[in-house]
Image (cartoon, rainbow, N blue to C red; front, side):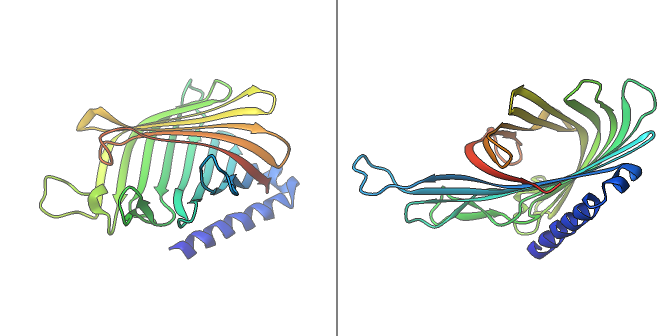
Amino acid sequence: MKKIIIQLLLIFFVAFQGNAQNKDSVKVNHWYPGATAGINISQLALSNWTKGGDNQLTWTLTGNFSLKYLFTEWTNRSQLKFAFGRMKLGGNEFRTNDNELYLETVLSKNVGWAVDPFFSSSVRSGIAVGYNYKKTPPDDIADFFDPGYITQSLGFTYDKYEGIKTRLGFAVQEIFTNKYRQYSDNPQTSEKEAFKLETGLESVTNAGFTIMENVVLKSILRLFSRYEHLDVWDIRWDNNLIAKINGYLNVNLVYILVYEKNQSPTAQMKESLQLGFVYTII
């Protein structure tokens, strides 16, 4: 499976490079590709330090590939994002601290209304094995597409405000598992299922603002609720504050809030502040 991911990334890269080599053809065909890759690093080294502490190294590889198609009444936006990172503290082994893959396609049509009808499809998964390091030895709790989430949504989108795009639709969500069936299990049955189908409502809001010169805030809020439990919502709120130092260096402050009752009865939070090296491929 990991080889498949690498092959997909290579295909995206080659396709984007091919489009970028002929800018005129991109304009004529209304295709707008984009691709960035980077590495975020946090490091601490100590030698004979009498005040205490330990050496630390954290790194995260990131990629953001996009493809936008504009033609008359139709708009198609596709995006592939991934992040994989590891951390080493002192003489301990490296531990995985970032492990996500996200692919989304949104097709909308301008019909002259205040809102536009759309259809979207998204895929969410980890990239490699994930561990619970609170236990000794650590327990593996996830892997590539185990669990894997595929969501289709049909509804209306609104993007009349600059920097904000929001959509709401009827959604179908499929959960696939293999070894870690606690994510897809139906507690009302005796066996542990490897597949679960859920129907409900999905809302996704993307926002991007320039706070000040060379400082940008990007935020994505996703909400999902099942029809049988409309009083309970899955929440994922991604926030990334990017301060540009120059064309290749960024300082990144990331804050993620997740609440999914099936995964944990309490909210999950993640925050990181790192120096990032970014290369714009397209």
